Image (cartoon, rainbow over all chains, first blue to last red; front, top):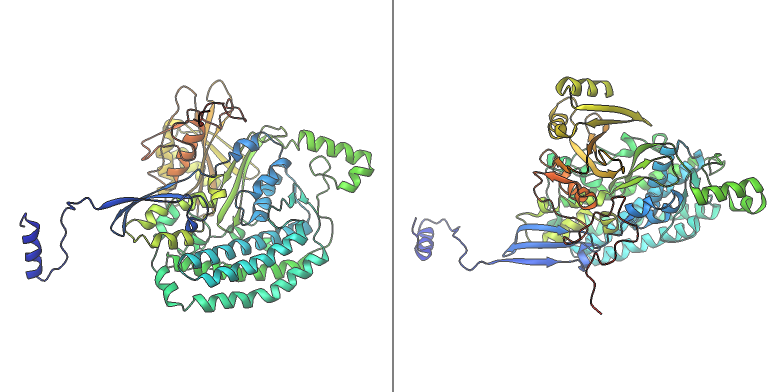
Amino acid sequence: MDADPKLRILHALESQDTTVTFDDPLENQMILNMGPQHPATHGVLRLLIRLDGETIVSLIPDLGYLHRGYEKLAENMTFHEFIPHTDRLDYLSPLANNVAYVLAVEKLAGIEAPPRAQYIRVICCELARLTSHLVWLGTMAMDVGAVTVLLWGFREREKIQDIWDVLTGVRFTTSYTRIGGLAQDITPEAIASLNDFLDRFPSSLDECEKVLNKNRIFIDRCEGVGYLSKEDTINFGITGPILRAAGVDHDLRRDAPYLVYDKLDFNVPVYYDCDTLARFYVRMAEMRESVSLLRQALQKLPTGPTNAANPKRVLPSKEKVYGKMEELIHDFMLVNFGINPPIGEVYHAIEASKGELGFYIVSHGEGYPWRLKIRSPSFANLQALPAMLKGRMISDVVAVIGGLDPVMGEADK
Amino acid sequence: MKDLLLQKLRAQFPAAVELDSEFRGELTIVIRKADILPVCRFLQSDPDLAFDSVRDICGADYQRSDDRFEVIYNIYSLKNNFRLRLKVRVGENDLHVSSVSGVWKGADWLERETYDMYGILFDDHPDLRRIYLPEEFEYYPLRKDFPLMGIPGSLPLPRK
């Protein structure tokens, strides 16, 4: 081979092989800083990208801009006091976080919520999945250029938040569950608005699919983008829709049933392409499954109490606290000294909208957890970002992040 | 599955299993610190056990005079639909543990988080940096001797 680059180009042209590679004399690689304030990083994710032209040579995610030290805070408050903090983890699906946390505490303390509460919790989880996926749908479609879907997604999410308003009393930071039950029962008004929503929602979903499913631009931006092989996806510990888009039929709702999921009938959508488009199809199919789950849960919703009859562990209702001595004492003890679960450690995980959301709690028999670890799906999923993007184009970054659907409140804890 | 797992582990590593216990249906095995990497490699590669993904790694500070810290591994076998908790006890004067990021890629960030919060050093980790806190921060906030309010002056603030 000739040492002179000019001669090499000439030789290459003569041999009709037009791809010439030689050392970059100008050091054309550049470092691009993306975030933490970037509209497509869905929060405060910062990426440091080394670029060669438009190709990504390497990429380093930088986390911690939303680190609030929730695990430290949890060690310094009672089990009940931590419930509002779980809202702020994955702030797109606060109800699912509430449910995941109290299920872990209930497993530790050996309490089981009554059937009605369990059905209402299923409704909570599925509504949370819908809101989370709707925000994902809107933002991801916007990231690859379809702004219309953002407005449609948020329009539907707004309706769900109106239901939350009736159900829990607030629209966003719900703090709805209690250890052993719920803050309040579901009202007929909430059921009516939920039914109304379920009747209309599938047609809006059809609308979104009509815009996207055969959209040339959308498919070109997503197909084959963010590819991560099935083996790598498993090895990275990725869970949720991304795992199911890589051909792994795994869903904790079915594989490790909690609440009353084993009494409900649902499919687990699985796609095999391992790319952003497959992740899109999985989440769209999941939303339809959620609608069916919500219908079934409403149909089967039993009557009865919503709080377990365990006065030493479960908060009494406020009316009784104001009128009865025994309940007042229990309320005082529970609020001031906590529920004092037995010594031990448990891990409980639910299939949240982004993957396996788990809480690992170590109890020393006191009112406070000795250690509380949040296993957040976004954190584990984000880890694969460099592997998905290496060697790809810079414009794929936003599509891949959109397909990963991270929420930084959860990843940074 | 539990019996098979313990039987296989004991046969392969007679001295590695220090303790096994079950609480609320969850199996916890305490592994001798020196053996954690070969044990993890075995659990991942054994075709019957096939613990193919790591779901969580975290630390815990028990404020004991010996073996103050624990590193807790939460691993999952998709094939058997089985979750296992491994534990390694780490003393305060020897904070080194072998990294398992060569076995499961997902362990990389989880070990960085454990290092960030407890100061446990993972040997042969490809990139052991703090993950949440700034690199110049000198303390490990989830240790029990770190106060909830923080340590004044531990982060540089603008001058008056």
